Amino acid sequence: MKNPCSGIILSGGLNTRMGGKNKAFLSVGNHTIIGRLYNTLQGLFDEVLLVTNDPIQYLSWDLTIVTDLFPIRSALTGIHAGLFHASSPHVFITPCDTPFLKKDLIETLLEELEPKWDVIIPVTQEGNQPLCAIYSKRCIKPIERQLKNEDPKIVRFFPKVKVKEIQEARLRSADPHLISFFNINTPEDFTTSEKMLADDLK
Image (cartoon, rainbow, N blue to C red; front, side, top):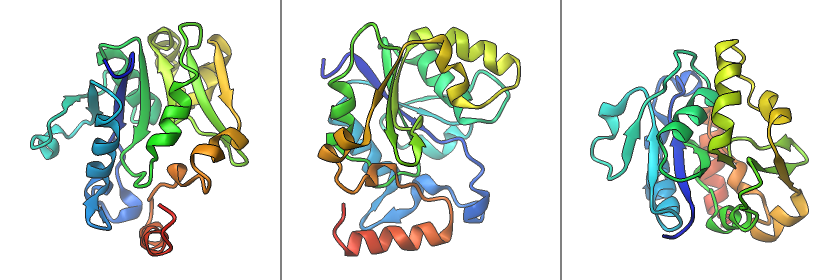
């Protein structure tokens, strides 16, 4: 077993700011974003799951496809589905629009993986990075209580669990430019991603 952890890709957004285009299939360089993520996660985890409510689009991919259990459209709902369906006691979460997620950064988080921690989360100058983090199955119940109250804010359940924060200085040792946290939401972001490739920041 590579790690006692599953890799989870969330693909549940409406992509409205990208004109409805599925961001997972955008090509950055010569590879789609989902292809980049899949290759990265496959090298670290025995189990890779994709959370989506539109599974037909992904049938050609060799990964387990699961869907949300709650009707609320949110990243927290996707995290819950990933935790619920994963076979491992912990999961690493990433959204489908982060083309430059670095293996070294994930490994930095995995180094902190201990049974006592329920959340292992990067913290940068921008704040918490809950969509590039590790969660334990013990998070399922507090997340369910929050979703039943229709509260989708991820960090709101953190006081109910044991959280380990990984500070920016440590993160930069694995990802000097912190490009793992760069995500594509708009056509302008997509243009920026191509410039990042040209500047060889990847």
